[in-house]
Length: 467
Image (tube, rainbow, N blue to C red; front, side, top):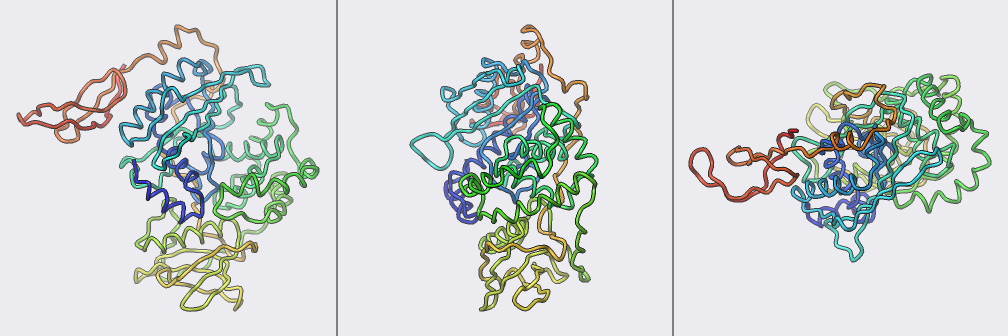
């Protein structure tokens, strides 16, 4: 488990409370445990706002729960879920020290409005930040959602020092499907986070899907929920409520809350694009000088100080949310529109921006920036914003056939076979000797290696699972 100081430092850097950052950290490892479990890896499809944050756009609002669609309804079984998440918790504990007390896990199976079963789970944990009352992760599980597009396996963003060397991946909804779900949710429940998500996804021009594909996905999603395809006129009556809840429902998930008006005012353009494929003209990117390289990969790890990295995070978030930045640079303060971060031919990291005070394009060496603060003043981009990622990092195409997406009523005997006890193969990291276990847990007792030497007790790596 990472040190408490790492959580506190990131909370300071991101202008968030420690418990929000700690939950983001635990969510990353929970996704790793779910993906590693053979009964869940290929049948649980990750979706929702946390999926957008952890798999697609790391410069995004933080989220607090995990939403999954299960490809088989028999996974919605209380006994199975308790047993499985006890195993997942043990697997995570062996690698991190994060505790998931089994007695603090609750799974409520209920009938949803469509007449089929869903589940809401609550899993308590004890992480690096000590608290008297254990925080909880909420799981929302359904098995009867309409899946329109094939899911994809994507990399999970886990910006902490204990990230596994091999990375974390998860099976998730396709980006277009996530986008369509968010538009449907905005129409159905009209919450501030849905407005924030829809506009953020629409603004990301590099990842914006074809309007016809989006509309087809949305129509199928709305038909399944028995609601009309949304239009701007349907949302107008909810505008006062959205505005009144903007602060209370969003502020704790963001390092800085953008003004509500800047998001609502994007909706006419979004619905015009959705209905006819017409989008505002995309401004051109700033010219790239000889030898310059645009830095926009998902996990931006630059050869800069921790303080400079903190300022880059401020600048990236401001750019994604179209907010002016007050930049302290060489003894004076400028109000800038941030556009692009680049490495020059001589190795310097440079921020390209538009200076609102001098009405001119300017560039700033990151190592000379003395401070960066977001403002609540929005701007309309005059150049392409290149500070965010283009989209997810794909790991592998999901090996699920479309016909397997429909929920299936299966017998208890089949459930036993599908979720039978596998054999876990753990490898000693010193001598590479393999050990068989009938349950997840990599603790290895002292043992002799193949050369006659002795390896002390330690934690092994999970290298295979056999049935």
